[in-house]
Image (spheres, rainbow, N blue to C red):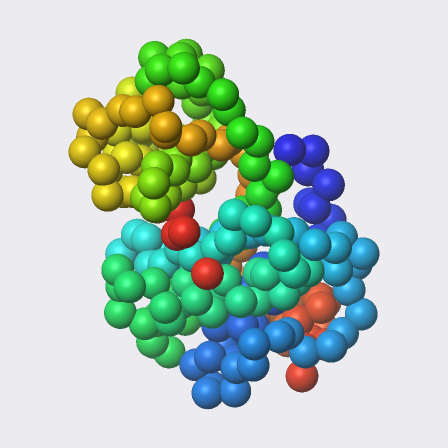
Length: 213
């Protein structure tokens, strides 16, 4: 993607952190508080929010593949879902909050990739660039492009994606549907969010949910 959101990186990270903080304070609401925001944050957008810590690794990841609300609202919702509603993990606790590393992945619109066979799919994929959605008769899963860091082989990447969708790793059918997309990744930490909040340097001071891994 073009990197057009780099100027709003801190604002999006702060929105995610503020959403989690509100959840810990039992003060969370489904929409972010009203505040002046850059036009690109009010535009319709889709995102995933990934939480991790240096000590424990992945701590939660939830998001949306299809844009249906403002990017600011999408990040706000997905940050809360990543912290408290990822079924693979216990909810984030207050003692963990300051150690969180937050990544916001903003998605391009998924593009249908016509393939006649699994070999065609493997040949068409671009590692490190392509996020992939795989669907087959009610089974659906996605991997963000970041997953290539852990699974660099296209064949294994697709095998693990099929397993995530609840299908055998060696499964293939002509009815399998594939979409690809790209992401712009914005990263930060809760500690940086606190510094900006205390200094009044970001939108966070105005403030007062398919899983890819």
